[in-house]
Image (cartoon, rainbow, N blue to C red; front, top):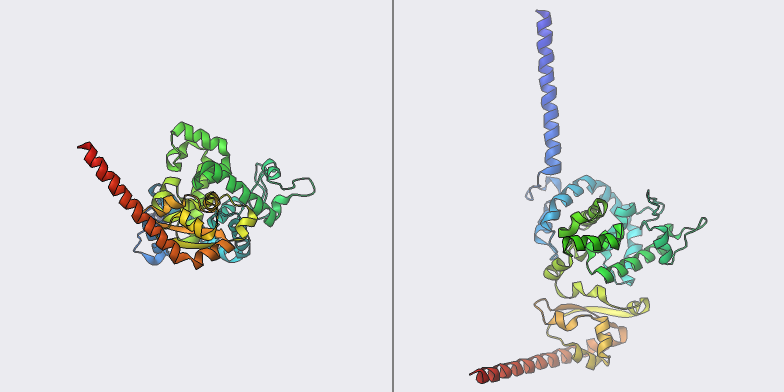
Amino acid sequence: MKRLLLLGIAFIGFLVYSQANALKVDKTFVALHIPIDTSDVRNGFNNLFLASVNGSNGARLNPRAISYVQDFMIRNKKEMDDMKSWGRPYFNLIDGILSRYGLPSELKYLAVIESNLKPNALSWAGAVGPWQLMPATARLLGLKVTRKVDERKNYYKSTKAAAVYLRDLYAELGDWLLVIAAYNGGTANVYRAIKKSNSRDFWNLQYYLPAESRNHVKKFIGTQYTFEGQGSVTTLTRDEATDQLSGSSMYVFTRKLNKDELAGAKTINISGKYFSTVISKYILMDAAEFNRYNPEFDKVMASANNSYDLKLPADKMDLFVSNKYQILNESVQRLLLEDESDNENKAVAGISNK
């Protein structure tokens, strides 16, 4: 009888243990795989995922990325919240350099996934520094890499080199997600994926990329959402950015300006029916030079998203500001004349067709 009683107690204990572990597994499953209810603020993610769906700044997270980003944030949020504090000096340095090269500030999160911002980080392949540059690439970018000196570990110099590299990759590929993939796996792999998939859309070609490069892009997106709570031009394909972001967001990175020109320029956001030729006349600036500072200006201003981050040399910006209303008035008059001319041409065409 005593033996049976002991066996019964043991069996009950086993059931309790099994149920407790089952509950533990279920909670883990819920945390990692079931989509978060955006009305539940206990996880602290409701604003983030509302932003990812609705796009608080107009950038909408691709549906094929939401599950990955959600899981990534749950796993890494604590570590990255800590990095916001101790990494501030590094981020400030990177922001300043990226700005000088006309690059989006969100590219700093590439250094997070490359090295956790560690200057002495070393990969199995031999990449070194906060930007994980390979020796040959670093030398091409002007860094010293010898037995005694390795400037890949120098935060300032390596960040400048990385900025040049990212700028050149974007000039070649024209899409920030493809740039991140190429930064990890090289442009040859990106072009191979484009050819095999017959697409330049990352979400269509991703499975033709090496798994490491594919996941690198998603980690970058997840990191940006963890830090910023929203996406930007660097978390979108080129077509997504063109569709979702207003004004000149897609064109400001194609400015062909050197470091001194960028440093000596001023920028203001303008909206309205401005014409580049009218602006050029009032500020005494060559039209080709104006277009170099402000690519696709007339195209953007003629679209529904007619807002532009106008960039001009400081003296030219002063002339623009002092003549702003005359410039806008003359631009509107020109637009009205063009509309009248179009209507007359249509009327003539209608008569001749009869």
